[in-house]
Image (cartoon, rainbow, N blue to C red; front, side, top):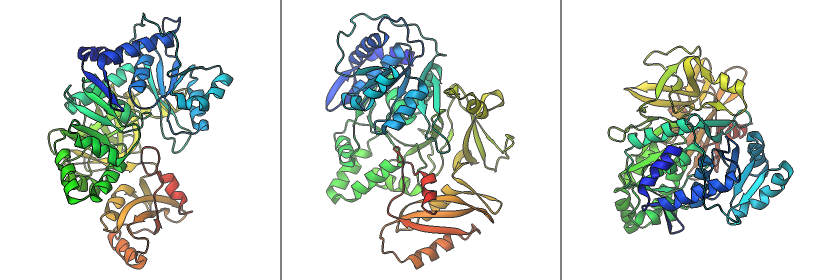
Length: 494
């Protein structure tokens, strides 16, 4: 990433970041990051891949600290702003972080831990005597650069280690595929301890000389207010955010709806990812914005690997084609390539793929097959040349009565009912069938006629000739990225 930071110097006097109506140029960003790198180094010549945790609010300071860690030769470990202390402590101890940088409001949460562990704590705004001259180390692309933690659905979260080479491959591929330019202006509304916000939004925009504007806390009204200013032309979000934006739009007057639609149809690109995009949400968004969302496929370990085309057919329910420089295979349980019309696990190979799980050699070895192919755990099928994700092998592929059934396909069917706002389908253990198909449903009206609904559900799911259960809930359990936590959904039926 250091070479991309250096590349940003070409845009010295251009606005790089906007937050709280304050603008910062690329020159200011690079100068501040370099100076902060000197603070991190102290008397050392190189941090030599020391892990540096940072719990910093979205905006200029976040990027400054992240870039400073890289320039000083450290490994950046972004911490979730909403996690409780035990979760933060787990990441800090697992990475053996030696330095923590925090916004002032988070200092009280971590200061006792830092004292106990002998960790150097730096509170933004309280620094004294920042160095005026800084000598930065020379960094090879093979160096570790970033550790992000997976969601840990089955075990404790694992630290995904990516190098500068991995990150540059991820960023440069997306810049080319999605045709980023210095004329772009994007709004960042995503959490910044995930690859979506860090790579797709911040890194791609700033490596292109574009403007990255931050909205520190989510608000549908605030997003639309910024849309109406007419400066933004790129937007990326998760399905839950689009769902909330649709709900806000629907509550407005005809005049306001017209104004919002008029400003959104001028965007050059809107992207959705981090969770499966329901076809119903994609179609509704197109109807109110005249934008066909670009859906793509990626994960913490690989960045983005598959994408619908920037120019070309964006197919609902499909994630598109392999990105340039990324190799994809679909394999069966024996890691043999499946037939063209069969579903299989996605294997990925390329410079975008991470190098290891931090301090977990066994997990790393188990995740790769011969010649560096990474096993994603996601099941897909190719339809007319486009990949369609069937779901996670662990939670979205239900094995019932000898059949492998996609929970995502069933969810798409259920969402076609006009009274079903959302749903989550999972499999729960059953001695006779292996797994039962169960669906938690969020309905428009709690007083809905359940007999009529069940009749409709039975008719729609007649193809799945296995026992099933339904449960009406007020809301589905979700994580910080808005993803439905299916392991928690299972608990609703126990």
